[in-house]
Amino acid sequence: MSRMAILIAETEGFYSNYFAHGYNIAGKDKIMGRIIAIANQKGGVGKTTTAINLSACLVEKGKKVLTIDMDPQGNTTSGFGLEKTELKKTVYELMLGECTIRESMVQTEIDNLLLIPSNVNLAGAEIELLDMDDKEYILKNEVDYIKEDFEFIIIDCPPSLNMLTINAMTTADTILVPIQCEYYALEGLSQLIHTINLVQTRLNPNLQMEGVVFTMYDARTNLSLQVVEDVKNNLNTNIYKTIIPRNIRLAEAPSHGLPINLYDAKSAGAESYRLLANEVIEREEK
Image (cartoon, rainbow, N blue to C red; front, top):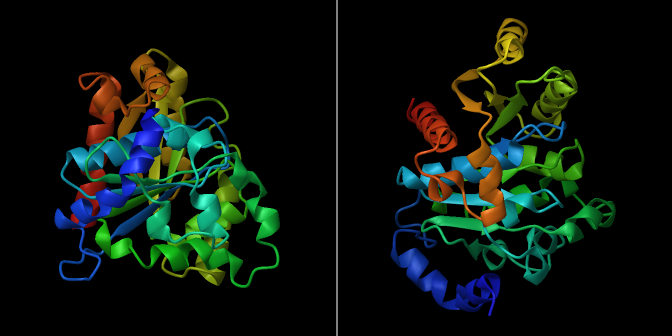
């Protein structure tokens, strides 16, 4: 039996144990979850890498985390070691009302980290949502049921500004934007910020910019340093102090279905995402 089949088979018994360890659906010890959408319509900037590893490092710091894979490519799902082809209840079924949000949750191999997975079926969701009322708020309305059971909810957005991304933004409290330290780093960023402003104005007035995190930094090149300086000089938003390096162990980890802190706990990538998790927690505490 595959690892995913075992996880699905264990799901029924999982919830009673899960809530017995502090996840109180009835509301006795509720937490006000902070919801962070990781977005950038440019592909290959480290959104999924950040979603997986920030989630895992927040759990390492003792936080209760739910990760939502809103990308039809399902790379966050496979990055946690789940077989996309074996999934029966995903964010696609959730968006179409074919399952509840709790039914869509899958336990990862990391204690205190749950995942709402995704697969290629989600690619057709935008067309199927066209005739639905309040289609911009489908995810938000579902997450409202469970957001107080988690300290952090991390949403990995697709590399486009479509209805899936809009749903993530109406659900989120803040937007975290990964920017790769390469020549076209700022390409499309103004459009993303314009979209965020539109969502703030029309759909989610409480949405804020979490900030920017630099990824794929190569200390051996002047270009990486120049990109960092250009963004700092031209972008009026919060910028995280932590910079994620270009690191071979980070690139290898997804093929093993593990976040970097489990794949190579002492790597530069693992240490960087631990520092990022610390900063995220510090901002929450402030």
